[in-house]
Length: 203
Ligand code: SF4
Ligand code: SF4
Image 1 (cartoon, rainbow, N blue to C red):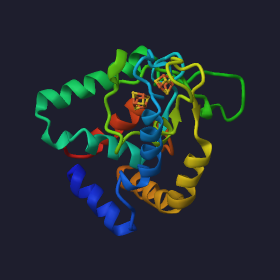
Image 2: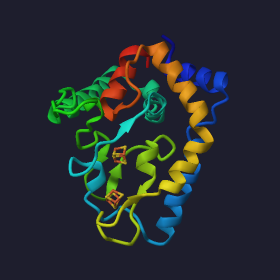
Image 3: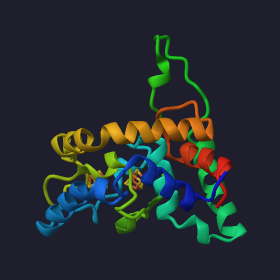
Image 4: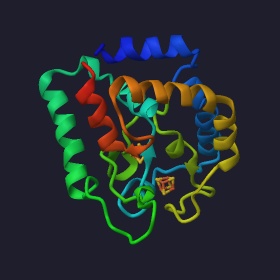
């Protein structure tokens, strides 16, 4: 398998897929508009990023873009191992690799909550760049100042608009990644998705 950046570049070029930032631009802009009105996450304990409410699932292209955003190609062996250890620890702590029997059909859609491995306590919050953050994370924001997560919600119209513009190209790309990397999932929790990519791709 190729290095991450050459693989991603070939995926973008082959499918005419706009860059990671371009596909998130409107969501990032909305966050900046909110911040201009002092509506931000800086005083929140991170309700939507912790086990309290986070069950984020991501697609294969989002997983590749998170790793590219972290610049893992510049990681030495120790740094790479430390990242893998953190991801594995999250999976173990929140039993993300254990299926729960719910008694319902199609229980594979069941989502477990977990504290995101990229969440820093306090005002630091998410450690990922906005240009590579999961779409769902970017679209979920507070509506008023300093309410510590009480009134946060997804901006469904911006998220749906993003989907409308990019979903066809992203679906093709996700199917190609699933085939190339032999993934059997459409969406996966963040730590497992990243570990699956790291297992298949050179850093
Ligand atoms: S990626 Fe960032 S915003 Fe999303 S759950 Fe993790 S820490 Fe929170
Ligand atoms: S989006 Fe809401 S719940 Fe999530 S960190 Fe920001 S203020 Fe807190």
